[in-house]
Every structure is written in structure tokens, then in C-alpha cells.
Length: 308
Image (cartoon, rainbow, N blue to C red; front, top):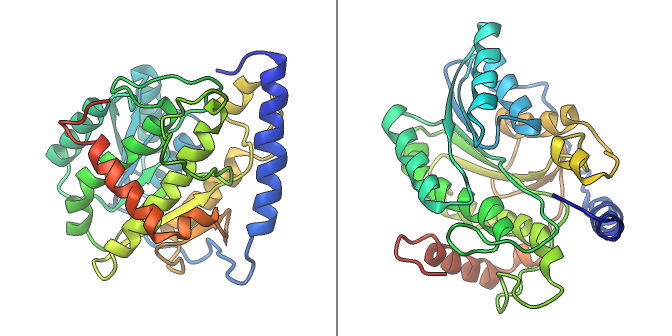
């Protein structure tokens, strides 16, 4: 997805130097989280988007190993079948694969309909699916692709499954974001102005964090815990390897952080976590007016009657 020496140099500066500094500055060590006291996952229904490869696949394997019923999601049916088979061979949890391209909101709706049809409950939703592009591309709905796949798809899926999550309370929503975050310019969310394409990934990840904070407030006292995190920096995933840049951490580290938010009884709803610790997101995430503006825009863009 990333080509050219110049693009790689710029990408390194953006995703290695800046985020690393921000992560270090935002890390809060007063509330360390551990995975020693884990909530029982046996019989729980867990949906992990983007779970046919990388971090999502490892998380799906781990919750299944604890006896969960896993909803595996991805675009590639062969990879999806391989994850389901692997989980079946372990003989602990169970898995079922659903194919959906998150570049299409219609496919997200169809996927959500299938989950509601096939499962009477949903205990955990992990919004992990994401892409990383170096050029501006549009989704099937005419939206900037990273904003569409990394954020809007998860927003729509979560909203569509929220009644099921509330019905299954206590339940959890975990949004896999990033330490790379860029404030949203609401006059150019789709990055149409020249030179703004490189902000797409970081903008979409901040949108995930803002959605988390907004939804956590809405779900207060309803038994649905809503969390977000930066799992680890530049994990050794296919996405990072294809960039031509060196990894700085492992999928195992990232999965530890995600599993902590899935299973730990000590996490706090409406928080951004940096690995196993509470962190601090981009300051726009704490702006109630900006969150309300994003919520209104997101509802508009995910409406069946929306036009690009």
C-alpha cells in the first residue's frame, strides 16, 4: 500500500518519530493494568473485526482459547476459514466467519443484520479492522477510505449492534485506535485539499477515540463498558511489513493490551489506554463540542439516505 522512497521517509517521520514522542508524553503510570485477574470468557460471544490476520487474528485465537464463541470477520474467505479451522482444532472455543468489506457501508449493514440474526447475545465487540494508506482513495460510498474503513464502519457496526450489547450487559466495546492521532478539520474531513492525504490514518484513529468517549457517556449505567487503546507501536503485522519499515513491537504485545481491556475487571469505561496503562489522547478528544460535531456528521454519513 505504500510505495516510493520519499513516501517511506515521510511515513517514518510521521508514524515513528511523532507518535513515539506523543505516546511517551501521554503515558500515565498511576493506573497500571494487569491481566492477572481475568474475567471468565467461557461461553461469551466475542466479535473481532479484521480477525483473519495480525492483531485481530491473535485476539480471536486467545478469546477462543478461553472458551468464547468467536465471530471472525474479514474480507478473505480462505483466511477466515483458516482461522475458524485453527480454533476448532484447539477444541476449546468455537468460531464462525463472516465476510464483509468495510469499504462499503451496505456490507457493514448486512454483516450487522447477520450477527443479530445468528446470535442471541453479544458480550464483546472489538473494532479492530483497519487500513493504512499513503494516497487519497474513496470508499464505495464516496468517503475518504481510511475514515470510512477505520472509523465509519466501526461506528455503524457498533450502533447497529448496540441493542444486542445492551441486552447482553455487562458487555464491552473495545476500539483499537492508535497513538497516531490528528485533530479533525471539520471543513475538510474527506481530505480534499492538496497535501492533506497523509493525515487520513491519524484522523481516523482520533475519530475512534472521540467516538469511544462519546459512547461511554451515553452507556453510563447501562452495563456497557466502552474502551479504546493504542495496543503497541508498529507491530510486526502484514500492514507494517508491507510498508517497508521496521517493526518496533510484536503482535503478542498488542494482543496482551487488547485482552486486558476485554477481560480485566479493573478497567474504566471512557478511557484511552496506552498498552496496559491509562494514557492521554489528542486534546480534541476531550472537546465535547468537537465530539458532538463528529457524532452528528457520523450519523449523517452512515444514514441509508446519505449522499457523498
